[in-house]
Amino acid sequence: MSRQNNFVYAPPQEALFILYEDDDLVVIEKPAGLLSVPGRLPEHHDSAYFRVLEKYPHAKITHRLDMATSGILMFAKHRNAEVAVSKMFQARTVKKNYIALVQGKLEGEGRVDVPLITDWENRPRQIVHFELGKPAQTLYQAVSYVEEEDISRVLLTPITGRSHQLRVHMQYIGHPITGDQFYHSDYKNTPLKRMALHASYLAFKQPLSGADVEIKGNVPF
Image 1 (tube, rainbow, N blue to C red):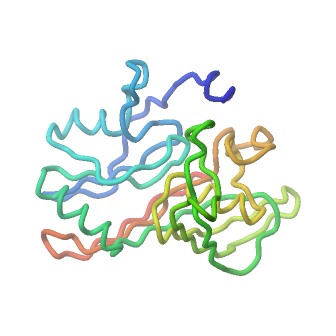
Image 2 (image 1 turned 180 degrees about the horizontal axis):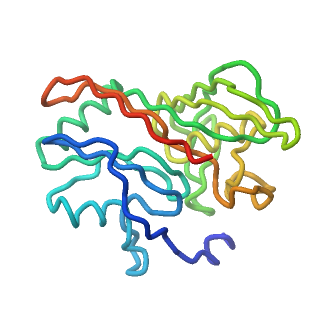
């Protein structure tokens, strides 16, 4: 809890970069350090959603990224689009990929299938709990390894969408994400000064127009 008590919100101030836009949707690249939606306190109101509303007053958020995670974040421009996108996510017809840097040498590919639950005494942390946790699955594929830094680049594909899922799953298999202050004991020892997790890819069939949409972001590490 001490890390949360010492938290000072200082979001980046650069303008949001729009990756994709049509009549129904707008997709941005959220920077690390910016909340997806406003927090409860007035000093936490600045967020990706708040900034999108300035340009699109009827926008609705369709999914979220952790504040420390950067990358692709989609908004619906109106209520009908919000409902359609919600059904699309529920049906799991959206393909999402993330790029992460993790501690240690991770090789090959695999699947992490362990249930997660909120650690209520240490919120917003999540923990593995085989009796009470909700099902959570993540696919991983090793991309490269830098021996000098003992860090692996990995492609992550979430099958489910639990809070902090990728972060806890990587910690569970012994490869916490670098810079992750919740799940990496040595989180300060990273030259990036941020958590190395980026939502890099989003693909789906636009639910109202039927168009095939594929969005690739720029990984900043």
